[in-house]
Image (cartoon, rainbow, N blue to C red; front, side, top):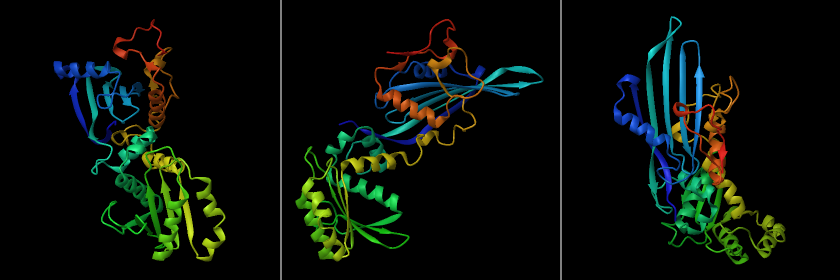
Length: 330
């Protein structure tokens, strides 16, 4: 099984151009020719950004892994005074430091687990029952702004058919959950759903959510809810079924958390500095306006990573031959 990665920290250094050590250039050259991620072997997309004002010229290079979010940044600054560009330039670089976890590692952050499953949902079959329960609890706790109460000491302890209870902060509503992790392609059967309904009635809950990683529920399970809707209402019982398709969408939203930008890059790129271009787009020069903002760069990098037949073969600016065609190669 592939590992999952989580952003821990980033390494940053800054030098005067003339004070740079030989190994600084070795580091730069290593990253500049890097085609695959040093952590997960995913596709690395390469981008360049140029910003010029009346007193500052900046060029930045970004390499970003579409799979695990690892990145490397290198940029140069040259200042202008009295209408003359100073000969001294500054260089700065930083790169992400990631933590590596096994898929079912209890210490792995749930966001990292969700990002991995969002990119490859088939890995959900390899989740342990406990990690599946932890992930569902984390998703609904954030989505509903709630606290979680556990009715047992673990997934292997008797829980009476209820894994955990979600208590909303706003209203104090208590919603009982049952989570089933399935390792086959079979649909979720009706019998476990009936058992969950019985557990809700026995313990006095009026709201319940049954979550399964199975792609869908059987027709009998769905009919149990639709045909028995009047009986459920008579017991003042509200039941919600969440299958693997819906759960996958929830996992994707939970992973992105409303922001595509990797943790270590947040706050780094401002929206008005929207001159980001893939290095293959340098043909014809950098436009004076337009381009991509950092959010779009991350999305485009993910698209490139998903299409393994296309990648950026363009050289970086220092070695750029203006007569050579720069393109997405196959």
